[in-house]
Structures are given as structure tokens and as C-alpha cells.
Length: 329
Image (cartoon, rainbow, N blue to C red; front, side, top):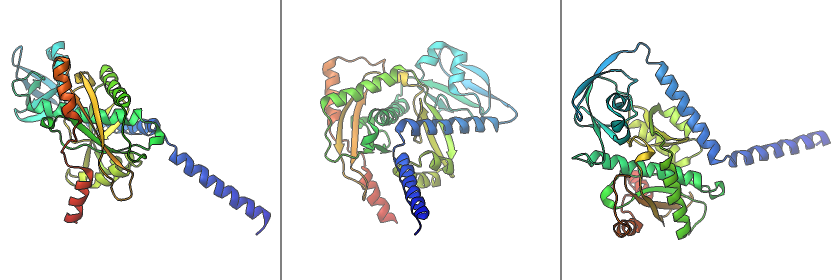
């Protein structure tokens, strides 16, 4: 081998190593920014496809009085309807109810004429709002975990199960590079503080439905999401529902509440080791409890809720899901 050939081989090898290291060192901030940019581009592309604007009738049912609003098909949202009613409805409405029985995101465009009810946390039947709130808490927990942990922790979001507020805690299952990790009280307080900071930013929670190809491109750095997307798309006509808050993008079928403003008192109470999937990093179940800002209780009662939220949530674990899928295969 000539000296020139040898040097070229060394340079090529070093360049490959440098490229590999750069790939490994992509920060969460960069990944999050790229996903958010893809989200914005797709949202704009879908808006431009609407073409001629058609009018729809939205029959609002509620206080101060029932009324009919003329809105734009595929563009107007329940939040836009609330803007025509009052500032109070804009601030207090957490979720919409379409045609009497379909829970609907406040920022999700309306596809056709319908009846509309705006739900708050004090609505007579809080079932839909409570589920949306619990689901949103898990979504926001994923955002906080991703942005708070250092990149060296190699945190990867796995998933959060369907909301069950009777369980006493909202959860998110993630993988971490460190085995047998046990968070300190101060670390849990830091996560809680970050949740409150996120809530204070009053960020809208946006929904978007995308093709499974785009979803795979968005989450290509996450092996768990990449594996989940084909199954999700298969059950939803090839589409995947994603949500964005700030620059954080995640997968969820929704619906979720209007904005981070609806998160009031909040505590991240525990992180339980829950095994691992094959050769992946150890999995941890992060848990917390929260209340909407309108719910005020004393510190003793809230302490009882916190203690309950520390116990391992009995929702199905990722390892159990894998076993079920293996039996069905």
C-alpha cells in the first residue's frame, strides 16, 4: 500500500469517526427544533391545501346564551368560536364537545357544521375534561423530562398509557443510561418546578395529523417511537396524531386541554425502575400529581395526594406490552 493510499484510508476512517460522533452528540434541543420545524411546515402545507374557503354553521350551546356562529370549514377552531363569545370563555374553556358526545381539542379545526359546547373544569360532567387534563399532564411531563435531563443521560421517551385519574398519578415511561438510579428529593422538586414554569408560559397545545412517513422522519432518533409508529398508523388509516407545546413534539391520540395555563399545582413524586426491553437501556416510570389552577386545597390534603402518587402506578408497563405483542405475533 502506498503512503498516499494509507493516508487516505486514515483520513477516511477519522472522518467516519467524526461523523459518527457528531451524530451521537445531537442534543435534545436540536432534535426538538427539527421536529418543531417539520410540524410547522406540515401545518402550513395542510392549510394551503384547503383551497376555497367554505362556511359552516356552528351552533354554540351554553352561557350566556345559545347562538349560531358562521365559521370557516377546516380553519376555524372551538377556540376561535370562544373568541366570538367572550374573553372568559377563551380563558376558562379547556376542551370542546362536538355534537353532544365528541371531545374535541380547542385548537383543532372544525371539519363541518356542528353543535359546540365549551367545557371547563367545573362543568357538570367533568369526565372528558379530567381525562384530557391527565393526558396533558403526561405529555407535559415528557416535555420537561426531555429538556431537563442532560444529553449524557441518553433519555428516550417511550410512551404514556391512557389516562386514568382514579389511579392517583399521571405517568411517563422513559429509558435512561443509568441503571438503579433513584432520584433525590431535590431532583424531584426540580422537575416539579420545571412543570410549573412550563405552565406559566401559557403555551397553546397544538394538534396535527400526519402521514406515517413524516412521523417516522420526525422521530427517527427515538427507537421506541419509530417502532410504535407503524402499529399506530395501521389503526388510524395510515395517519399519526402528534401534539406540540413550545418546540416539544410527541405522539398522542388526544384530545388535550387548550393551553399549559390549565396546569396549576403540580408535583413530580417518584421514578420507579420497571425493567428494560431486550437490550435497551433501563426503563423508569416517572409519576406525578397535579390540579387545575381553579382547584384550591390545603397542604395537608394535597400531601395525601402526593403520597398516593408516589406508589407505583398499576397501568400496563412497556415490558408487558412487549409480551402481549410477542404472543399475538
